[in-house]
Amino acid sequence: MSAPNTAEVTSETRANADAADAPQPARATRRRKKVDDASEGLRAGPIWAFLAWALTILFFLPVAWMVLTSFHREVDAAKNPPAVFAPFTGEQYGLLFSRDVLPFLINSATASIVSTLLVLALSVPAAYALSIKPVEKWTDVMFFFLSTKFLPPIAALLPVYLIVKDIGMLDNVYTLVILYTSANLPIAVWMMRSFLAEVPVEMLEAASVDGAGLVRTLREIVAPVVAPGIAATSLICFIFSWNELLFARVLTATVAQTAPVFLTGFVTSQGLFLAKVCAASIVVSLPVLIAGFAAQDKLVQGLSLGAVK
Amino acid sequence: MTTALSPAADPETTARPTPSSGGKWRRRAPLLPALIFAIIVTQLPFLATLVLSTLHWNILRPGERSFAGLSNYLIVFTDNRLRAAVVNTIILTVSVVLLSALLGLILAVLLDRRFPGRGVARTLLIAPFLVMPVAAALLWKHAIYNPTYGLLNGILNGVAHLFGGEGPTIDWVSTFPMTAIVVALVWQWTPFMMLILLAGLQSQPGDVLEAAKVDGANGVQTFRYMTLPHLRQYLELAGLLGTVYIVQTFDHVFTITQGGPGSATTNLPYEIYLTTFRKYEYGEASAAGVVVVIGTIIIATYSLRLISSLFQEEVGR
Image 1 (cartoon, rainbow over the protein chains, first blue to last red):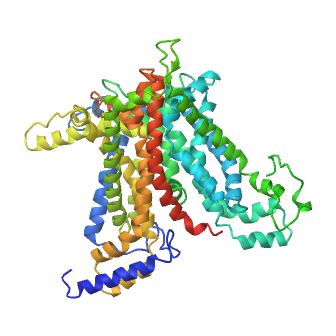
Image 2: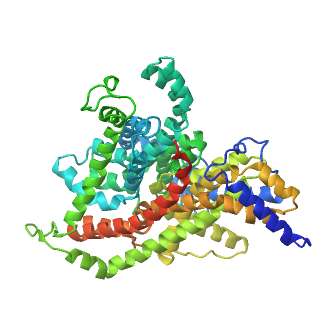
Image 3: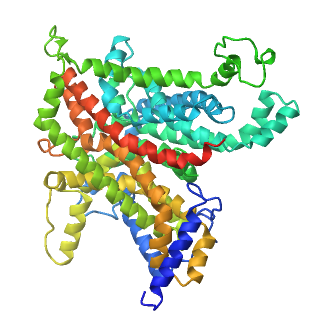
């Protein structure tokens, strides 16, 4: 900091930075390796590592507490100061499954999986028409899709409710399927387009010169590039549908209630229920936790609409 | 691929150089199902909202449905509850976005270096984002904030016991309702910010950083003059996407405070929900919805400009 030539160095580094930034705006072409690759990146000193781990543990503490509490008996869960070393029991999980959390999970799975499949069926051809053989004004179409994502769902809730009531589709899980499909379609179109845009045009031309048909071209050239995109898109659509509460709460009553609606039963609970609510929270979050942990990089791509690869 | 109706003859027989209308429709065909679906399911409800917003309509007073002109909007703009909801929405959104972006940046910078167990740390840090929002809100409300058996008072009590005292019995949610929601939301959204910013840090070319080091720049200088400018667009992207999602927060308000005490934590989505399904003022709720849409369009226009700048490089295709 107190080096005599500080000013000089900074102006020089700034110039370097500008020069380096200019030719590569959004995505740097040369990328360093992923974080999981332990051999890459600057080595952290012991204080750095300590800080990183301290913050990580602080952030993870509520989750750890939730898991611990879910394996305690209710009386131990409500101890103050906390009874960290109380004996473990799985009784809450047993109670949960014996007292019908399953229908809620099945409804959630139906709504999420069917809507994700529907989103893929609609978005993959659309993305093809927006990248590989683009329609005219395809950027306008892209921004139309994106703009629908910016519309707040709360403003559509009442008309959707009235229409759904009118056509007798209240308390039907397929109503949620349609709504989740429309909510996730713009994300999927954006993501799939960004993946399809990476299919090398020369290879497509070569294939058509060789007389390869559409199906063969799709299978042999497009599919390998697009498969990771489909995985990332599915993950994001699944997470958003699985977690959705507002529409599920308003549009379902008894048979079509999903897992988030099941949890709202605990909002005003009183008495000894802490272990139960923790166990329930873990059970309903588990599918998303597993999927998200398994596909961490896909998560980033999806959350940024494919802008960050 | 050719399921949609194409009005013209097959493209083989048409002239090559200018794309014929048949060729155009062939190109458009795969797009149409998604486009039509999106128009029907997303645009029609908003048109309906516009129409509803001009009606006097409360289902508690049946038969009393009449044209109201703009009077619902007058109510929206003069109603104290709604004005409070607008203020609460802004406070909630701005504080959650700023705090989670700041924490996310700190974590991303920490995780950009190599240390033992870095992969594990990243996995653990993502967990808060993957917990179902209602579940996370319940966890904070009951297991952490609760005055008698919550973790927060529990830890304070445990520490006080060490010194032979009694811990406080603070009712966190009713004493600091807005802070309680903000903290729970920041906890959930920090991993989101961290993931995008970490991807940004890792896209920074390594040799430029090396060059800076060779030139004698220290860590702070490198961060200030090279990393931050490089990260700017990632920060903007994270901030804007975060804003779009957090403005719409419903789950946490509904779960932790139910908008209370009074309307201290009622944000716009929750207020519109109450107006619709508790007060059954359909016209008024729709007018508020339209106002929210207009507000969102203002944010969105700015976001779209940003995203289209990210997008520019690809347009040449």
